[in-house]
Length: 335
Length: 119
Image 1: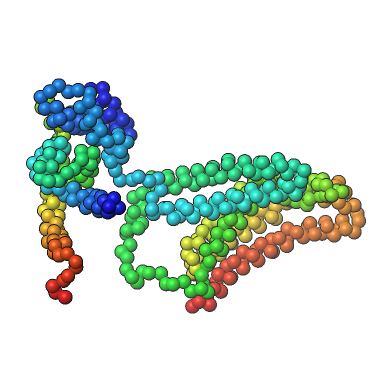
Image 2 (image 1 turned 90 degrees about the vertical axis):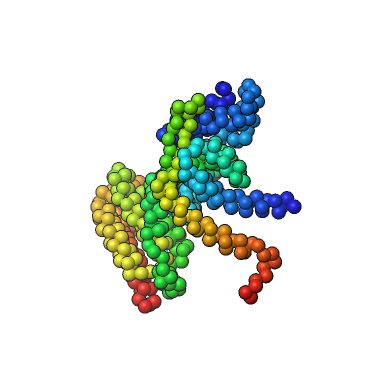
């Protein structure tokens, strides 16, 4: 009865360890019952066994019936969120490496073919990676958070009065706004993380790229990058909330205010730290022959450079404050 | 015609899925092992495949409607299933529901063409 053993094994190896022995015993006794009913008093032949196994069907199907319940990696509760996150991430990723590609071509048009090949290759290496990680994340959430998710869906007794109001167009946040926001943040993060050396003044001599005078201090950049990533990470959280609320409310304005305040503090901390900026900025400009030391334009640029921090801060703070104020106004208007 | 057959298959599958569970429960006041349950059900006109019934029995046991015991005294060891107390309670309630459904469905299905005497 080797065939029976093989069949039983083929079914049970697809089942959780704890069930295996029991299912195997039960299945074996079932198959023997079926075989003996078939042969009555004759001797059992291999053909009888095969007929019975054919009746039971492919082991894979039987194992699936034993496993029952879940036949998906990401269930219906998470699926919408999953596709959305996936869409945003893939769009951001493509946008990010398209931007890198364009920058590379501008800097060095001669190598366009190489860059283009790299660009194409990244579609096959990076995109599946993004896809894989997101899917894995959601699969884990599904696996470990299943009970919690069901509770989340069921615990509130639904009443028609719970229906959300039809959004007031004045307060409404269009879905594409936070999506564009998230894509933007991701893009900036990628550029800052991987291409920060392009962040500066590009020097061209005789129409050829001659180098970059970086705005940032490359020695200390790494430690600042962490803080920058935190700021942008909070930005992404904020955009996500906008996406879910779908309209401006006081609590959303409050949260936006908190996130933005936090960002302002961190940004202040970064930008006012002299170590953040390239200490040799002016010298490097002179070295590249961009300006002549002591000339009038040198002084102007030096002034701009020194004022730059201040004005960027003002601009940034203004932008973040405006984000809160605009939201607040929209809530007020709708009342 | 094969189109109609497809529809029938699908509808019958849905119908069976619900009825097999209570059908199996209804025969388990006395302990039985899977294959004998299949034979009993077959005799009473309910066809069910072993590949469907065996996993179903395990699931019902896990849910607490059935209890099981291995009998190793016979030539072949067999796993016997029987209704638990919860199972009996549930089955009694389901029986009432079922009779209601049968009565209502009979009422709906017996007349062809949708004529309604109360109309």
